Length: 362
Image (cartoon, rainbow, N blue to C red):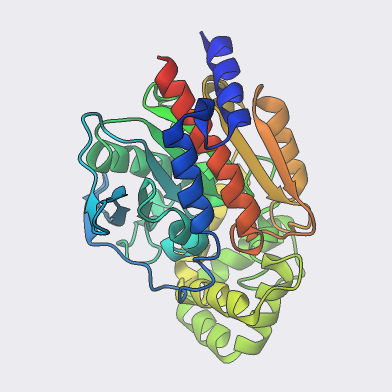
């Protein structure tokens, strides 16, 4: 069955948004095209929906926002879709020291065209603070399951994860492999890995360090105890921090507004949170878990100039997931979801089409 599903998914992906050439598929594709460029025309951080609170299994409140699927009426008015069957939902999982706003270009591009769920990981953005013992990748996987249970109780799901968000999806796959090919109909892993990461790399845009290995871990633990002083130093050294963000988050020259936006998200994440999650990256070893993703269309995306989770990690994931696709965005860095948002969204278009084809084949 998994081989059949992979073949059907590949066929649907090759057809793009116009699944099987249907009039509905073509019409939707035209709407997707019309929305290109919407992100650049929209101020960063301005896209919002009514907040929903999902309480994690350890009591931490998670901030969630849902953009519902909207149909255009003949009279020009718009209404939320009430379908006979639950629509496909795309759930976006953000990365380390960021928040849900990092999906700006994806949210702008898909707003109203597909039901989309965005949330702040625990201790990030508007979500509640985690205890130290629960600041782990495994807990993030459990948080994602809780969000699916409460916000997407029915219908097929496509999971999209960037950096730590991709690790969150892989943790879910380890904990609940039965969901993949059943509830989960597609996965996108962007600028991420399932293990073998040098954790000191991921600190570079946040706190540039020239040390590595065990020394870095001891230094982070020590700095975490004095996190308020570290945060003050980070604020005073904003020029250095902005340059570090430009160098380590992006590969090519991008507009200054992109750099400032990412730098603001990084700066708004307390160093105590940075220190609490840091240890999880060193222990990450979940390549065995990605076998569950063989059952669904899986898109792997990375920039060739990613200095934090290098393209080698994406190539290794691709090798471990038969039937997956790999998009390497030339000269793009870790924040490929912004830097090459047109390419990323086009790949997500293909994934959503493949997931829809998988659902229709059941």
